[in-house]
Length: 471
Image (cartoon, rainbow, N blue to C red; front, side):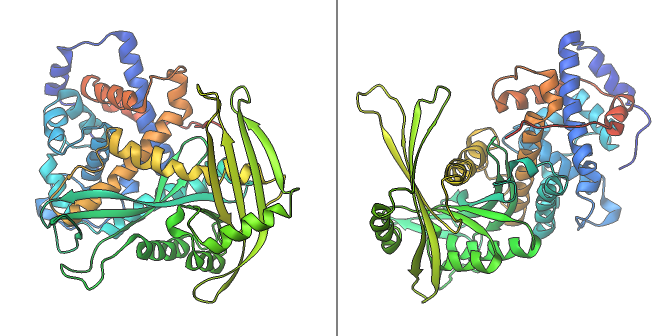
């Protein structure tokens, strides 16, 4: 991007008509600083972040460099605009927004949403996936996430699927289909591998799009097939990364155990009462013969929650492929005080290849298996209902839809770094409420505060230490 020397006079004139309260102006400047510094501190800026993405456009017709168009897509999600047309409504015709594009990106104005769609429809999705994966890899290699490892060794990777798009008519030849009472639904699910932490950080590591090879396949794609593809890609990309997979009951079975043994991964898989009857029966029988493998643990603010933990090691299991496995099972009965005389008790159970001991069982249950829910709550739920509008069709083009999805993952990662980082917490020690409020304030700052190149440059040159809340 070309560095501008000054903000356009017309932009300055627009801003001058709308002076801001000095305290509010300082807050907005601090919030924008948190964004700019975060992007440059960890990832070298948008130029470097998207530097290896191939631009498919004819060079003579390019008005906006590719990193600017990618950054605009990220901003759309970061500011929770919820639709592509809102780029034109809220950013493109706004003077302070144009000033920031001129000062930060070196272009005259914010590009139109249709310009983004044109580029994204022609981009290489695999290259965008490398950007997403590379961002989380950067945080791993920079030891930002070392304090969140299980037993100071294993990175917790939760894998789960979710719906992305759904249509009443066929969207593309790769649509999945489901027919109920004569009505056919055409949909596009994804399988995500997300790195999760006890503090609620959830970063996309890798995505596998679940889709059919053509319009009339003999067998549809599914979450299990996608799991094996995603696991192989994950192992190829991170061959030596110590991983502990957190999986739901869909993946409880011999093929998953064999794959983790082959890749030398640890796993904690939810074990329902009707999953793998042999292992459940063995656990019930053997736990009666080892009453010492039991622990009562109290947690909560006032130790009001009681957990009864039982475990059995070295359960021999022969799967349907005649492969032998030695697994452990952990059961947690959690009782919370309630309004009823009889407090409710919830049962959790996991099958794992960890050797379970009294010193490790609480950590395995509460800092391991229980964190699988982070991908549902802090991951998919936030992206669907927290303003990112994951299930909104940002484009009718299938390729562009995937690019938008991956840019959403980038925006969610940046939003979490801002929210949990020390730069934001120094300015707002009491917080500002929900993450939606941060996005709202950031949108206000983007639309109301005019920054020149002289204001942006110190943010780009800043050398700071950014700290995150301990686990």
